[in-house]
Every structure is written in structure tokens, then in C-alpha cells.
Amino acid sequence: MKKKYYITTPIYYVNDRPHIGHSYTTVAADVLARYQRSIGRDVYFLTGTDEHGIKICNAAAECGMTPGELADEVVVHFRKLWKRLDIRYDDFIRTSQDRHRRRVQILVERLVEQEEIYLGKYDGWYDESEEGYVTENTARENDYKSQISGRPLVRHSEEGYFFRLGRWVPRLIEYIENHPDFILPISRRNEVISKLKLGVEDLCISREAEKLMNWGIPMPNDPRHSVYVWIDALSNYITALGYPPLDDGEKDCFDRYWPVDVHLIGKDILWFHAVYWPCLLLALELPLPITIFAHGWWMNMGKKMSKSLGNFISNEYIEEICDEFSVDYYRYFLLRSVKFGDDGNFSGERLIETYNTELANGIGNLLSRTVKMIEKYRSGIIDPPRVDGVGPEEREVISCANQLLPGNQLTSKKQDCHQPGKR
Image (tube, rainbow, N blue to C red; front, side, top):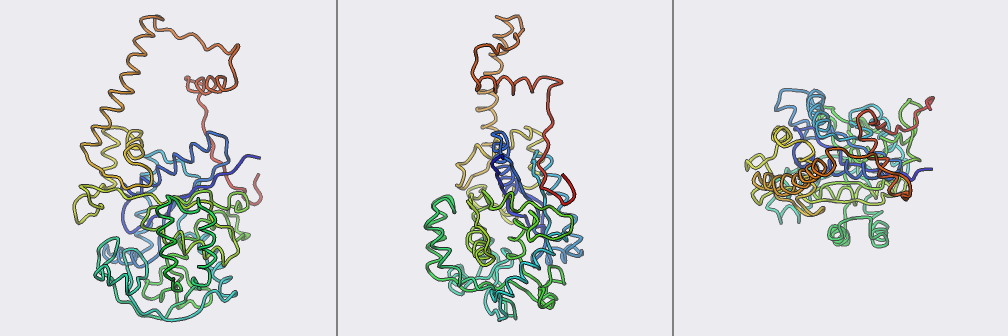
């Protein structure tokens, strides 16, 4: 049996079109998935969109649309860009899909039955741009603005359901300390452990449904409330594999691929993935991810990209780069320009310089000289490769090269999860 490899990107908010940050994570995951396929592993690559939450509701209201209409419109741009960038994912999940909604409700029901969820009241600060609650100390340290977006925090007070996060923190700390590859890079791992040891409050996992325009997944035990973003969104990594199992004709490959080999994310959502998600899995008695890797941000003009600063690399600009230089060069530039895990700095000058020095002058000149030598010394003819007396590694290279010849190209077929009634 082939060794499996399951890799995921975050699922992206549909409050706006994709940008360079989305493409960076997804291209990196695609490259890792391709490599694992090339060495013969059974690969499953998941991406998708997160379509619930107050950000989507607010963005839809500004556009005079319902949240569902906005989600349907924006998701097209994600799919279109991934196709343009030759992203070869195996599944694209949307949190508005019935396959996800039904399974999230079952997971919540299970946690309620285990008394891991209780009714309480939240009174404090809320970061709408990041869909997260903020402690008084953190709010004060950041002048009551979002640590990520810089937008003002919102004072929030309402009844809600809470997950007993604090109950699982000691076990999580022990797990992180005993599994050095669980959170990478190491600097991010150290940040998470330090913050955990300061103490963690229980997690509010619901909002009043009417405040979300009834857009979301109803709490199965109390439809006045909706399951809120992080327990909803994070569950996609297992609902996409058909967990919990339902007789609904959807994929059934949880046992085949879980635990995930790599959750690839941006560093701004590390806490949610490295703390909330593992504690939920512990409460559900499910295996934890093997690795959560948090890469850095793309900067422009030395600052984190934002529309208000005018340094934003938009979906449209990405299309222009691909038109002028090629899709392959855009992918190359993203992964070549920064040590993976660190922040990267984008500039148009660097884009052109890398193209000229590394591809045109480096690889381009090598190709040009090779072709001229073949023409000069071999009359432009390359003899068929000899296979006598060569080892298995050389034979594999020859076989791969032959597949590139016209008429010999093979179409790759994605691996599908088992579906009931299909083989």
C-alpha cells in the first residue's frame, strides 16, 4: 500500500477576492503535493472557502447582497485563479455545503453530550476583521485595535456557548513539548507554548443567529445561536474526508488520510490552528495533526499589505504578472524570493530582476548554449538514449524524459476517496 500524504491550505474568507497571500499558501501546498505524488505517495490536497461569519455578513450588506450571493460570486474568483495558477487540488470544500454543515452539527452534538460545551455570556472585545475574541490586556496593548488589521475592536456582549478550552490546555502543552515537529518553524512553536503557559480562557463558539442574518450553521441544541467561525471552519479538514460518516453518498476516506501530514497556514492564524483545533480534536478523541506549518507574510514597501496603504497585490495584478511573465514564473518567484517561514518583500523591480538574472541569463543562456552545441557537433540530432548498462536511477530518468516526447504524454488522474457504491 502506498504511503499517504494529506496536505491542506486554510479555507479562505469570501468577503473579498483572492490576493498574493492566498496564492502563496496555495502554490506552496501545490508544490509539496506534486513532489509527494512524484515519489509515489497517495496524496490528498484540500483547499476551499470559509463562508460564514460577521465579516461576510458585513461585506454582503455593503454590496447590497445576501451572504450566500456574495459567497457564490467570490468563490468563482478563487476557483478561476487556482485554475490559472495550475493548482491541482483534489477537493475544494465550501463551508456552506450541506456535506459540511451536517457533519459540523454532529460534532457539536457530540461535544454537548460530553459536556465540553456550556451556555455562558461573553462580555469583552471582539476583532471583527479576524473573527476572534480579544482579552482586555491584549486590547489595551494594541490601543483597542486589531493586532493584525489595525481596525478598531468592537465591544461585544451577548449570551453564547463556550467550549471548555482550558480543560485541554495542559495536555496540549505536553503534546507540543513532546512533538518538536508539531508546530513549525521552531520560533512559532516557542511563541505558542509561551502564550499557553500564561493561561487560556474557554472559547466562545456561537453567536446569536439574528446578528448573523441567520447565515451559518445552527447550534443543534439551540437554533437561536449559530456555530461560530472557528469551530465551523476548522472542522473542514475532517468533514471534507467524510467525518463523521453519514450515509449521504459523500466521500469516505477519513481512515485513509487522517491525521493530516501538513496544515499549511499563514502565521496570523497560527493560534487558532495550534490551540483551538488540537483541543477540539482531543475532546473528540481524534488524532492530532502531524505538522502545522505557519509561513510569514508578504510585505510591500516594507509594510504588511493592505488596500488602505495602496501596496496591495490584488487578483488582477497577479493576472497581469502571469500574462507578462508566465504562470510558471509567478510560481517560481513566490517560492524563490523568500526563505519559507519568513516574511517576504514584494517589489516590481525584484520581480523583473529575478526573471532576468536567474531565468533569462542563467537557465536561458544554458539552454541556448546547449542547443547551439547540439546543432554544431551533432547536426541538430539527438540519438535515442541507450539503456544497456545503466542503473535503475538512470532508467527512471530516461523513462520520465520519454514521457515528454510528443504523443507520449500521460494525463495525470487525481486520486479520489472511496465513495459508497463506487470502486
